[in-house]
Image (tube, rainbow, N blue to C red):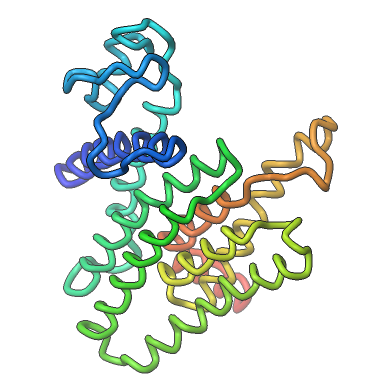
Amino acid sequence: MVVLVALFVLGLVFGSFVNALIWRVHKKKDIISGRSQCVKCGHRLAAKDLVPVLSWLALRGRCRYCKKPISWQYPIVEIALGLVFAASYHFWPVTLSGGQWLLFVTWLTVSVGLLALAVYDLRFMLLPSNILYPVAAIAAAGRLIYIVGFEPTKPRALLAWLVSLAVAGGIFWLIYEFSRGKAIGFGDVRLGLISGTVLADPLQSLQMIFVASLLGTVAILPDLFSHRKSLTSKVPYGPFLILATLIVLLFSPSFTDWYQNLVLH
């Protein structure tokens, strides 16, 4: 329980960073050394204004200086990442020991960037390269170090990773090419490569694509029936892909066992 609480709090802190990252990337400001400020009045924020969730609640969702509303995005993103951190530890599909700790920490780090990408895509219909590429590099570095240092069947693990990349990135690339960029954007292709690296398993990459498509379909159906959107309307696909990656990473073994038992019995 102590570990879960600690990870939840750590997720809240990094969730605050995600909110700042999204704003700084969108405004083309310095990501690393820039100081936090109100997005409405530009006033530099004090430390007491930056406590995840609690500052928003204490200020009743309004800036201390200009009194303008602070978006619900801020506490929601912070809580979401806290839940991701805690759930990842609780539902990690194998025992956390040795190289699994490396994969776990890599995943937590990658999940920070993935949440930033999901929210950015929802808000601006774009997956920015200056978030995509660092996240891809971290995911690849963690996977490569794990294979070299901890995987006893190195050639097989490396092959599985490469095929997983071909499945996750290749299928999205084919969709992108055949639709001439109308069905999905090229950012989704690059995001598929990150998912393929995180999962590093061709079957799980196929499951991820299925789950992402299912989530996207379920999400858009109400708008289709209400005629708010049509089949040609643009929908940010990145959030569904990212959520599907999380679901498959944590629950794929349970799903596979359930399916095999269903078929065999």
